[in-house]
Image 1 (cartoon, helix red, strand yellow):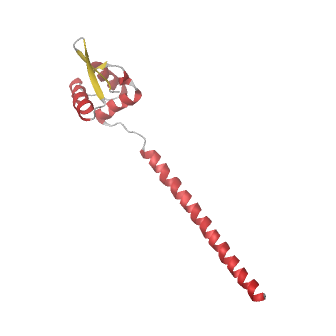
Image 2 (cartoon, rainbow, N blue to C red; image 1 turned 45 degrees about the vertical axis):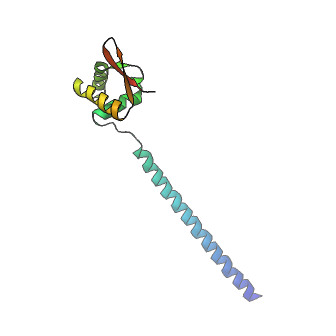
Image 3 (cartoon, rainbow, N blue to C red; image 1 turned 90 degrees about the vertical axis):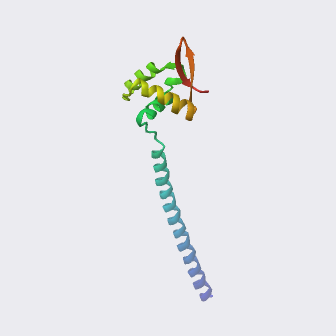
Length: 119
């Protein structure tokens, strides 16, 4: 009887030690997951750099949800701190945002091209 109780105590002790290790591992895993998910959330913050970034910023703010001329877009970019020539703005709208990415389309109203987000 004493040997059995002693054996049971040893087994109980080993089980408790394993349960403690499992709890420690679960705690470490949850801490690691929190650290990883926080980093991913920070990476998702959009940074708008350069002229393409400035136009992307205007699109994300909804400025191009209604048709806008190149001059209107150029003026709004200036307000946002993006200072580029009208020609550069026009070219990036046509080449990058219309032809390559297909985000924008343009409509001709009174001989003036107006750019708007493609639906």
